[in-house]
Length: 269
Image (cartoon, rainbow, N blue to C red; front, side, top):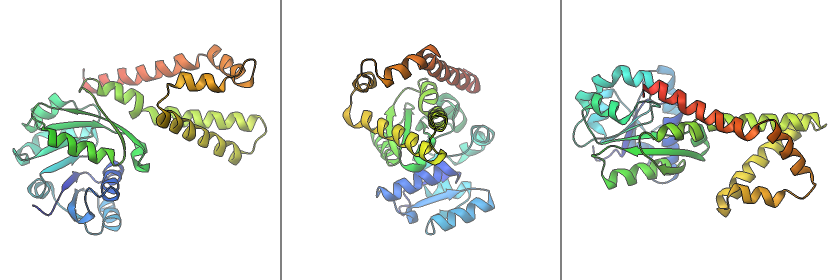
């Protein structure tokens, strides 16, 4: 048991992203990580990416690892939750990334309060993710620090309450889809203006990337940075005026709230 740092129930995209981030950050080697997955094709993929990792059954996962990340789809987790309870002991820290499965449901199903729930997003695959984490009552400071370091290896981490994870879902969980639509629309505008598809997409993608980095690195509010690029009677204010008339800002806010509403519906809250 002392050889392994942690393990994953599920070996999909998020589990592999977290494992890769942990290895790159020096949190663990692949020989210190275990995976449990029932898909034969995925098992072969895991073997190719993490040749020294341990591939185990559910029972072996909990027997070998004191830190277990539940990286399966929400409905799958709900179906197997009661069956997992027999494997969960006092020494286990359980981390769930299943959207919509609350800490209350997890604690009730697993019979433990040593649970952390995390809402990551797909940019974790590029080590630029955003994750909200919420902890149940028995989670220790050491548990929190470990979980923060794991998800910090694939991006930024924000501590929130369990209920606030619905808001995290609306902003960053579903957020990549909004940004991708923005990149697509921005590049379409470039094509309409006469740019080639490749040039327009490169410019749009780099503009979104660079602007996000500028906000992050300067710590300046987006409104202030926007004012700095908005000259009197210039091209930017003309574009912003048109977007505001089309309801751009309110459409984004409404979209976030629609995602939050749906997240609550799926969670049954």
